[in-house]
Image 1 (tube, rainbow, N blue to C red):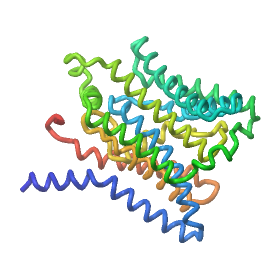
Image 2: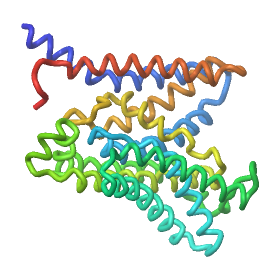
Image 3: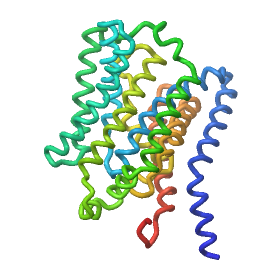
Image 4: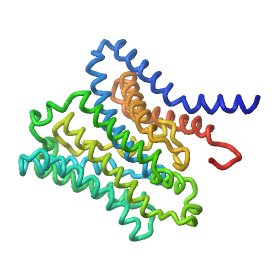
Length: 325
């Protein structure tokens, strides 16, 4: 009897992120209607913000599964978009712009991993340094080329045919399916979960941490490149504040999606999708409910409290006396 009730409780906790996403969506629609705003416009905004966060978070899952994290993903997204804009303005070659975006994103991500391996320091330490460097370089380029407030950009007509939900959903679905395959159906994902769950045992069994860390950061880099590209499709310009909060937002979104912050065997690739859209919905609900000069500060406080509550609830699902199998 106890075993049945325990399984029911774990199932409910597992489904909680999906239920929370549904509730947040209903609340969001209710608030928009109550304020008298156009729902279709707000849904478009939510969709575009959510797609970028979900794409970058999906790639970042590989890093978080190792028990590490990367807070430079937002700065890397900004830098990749900036390089893409500069490439197009210099060559007027759209395919070359896409190549520059993805090449820059993967290179930035790999640099953090290789630097950590070379100096034998935790990867998240190098991402802190990368956050500062990439933000500063991007800001210098943008202010030099476009002014402090103007930013730099590409012609809207260049990406307007791509600025539609079917195209963006297709890109998100393809990237998610590729990540799902690698994460769930290959030894890469299994070994990364093993490393995140117990790095000492993984090392003693001969699993090379550096190899799988490089793979994880490469997948994250691809996600960053896709996020930078989708950002330019939606808003064909970059400013010093573009993608500024993605790094920390990913951390919160993954937890909202029901994934333990310690990574390991209970990591789930779908946490990025569920958590990404949940976080964007929650932020917009709070902004609608707390309109005014102090709305931003209150929104951050409420989001932090909600984050802690989600961590406590989801951790119940893996607080047992036995090691995860």
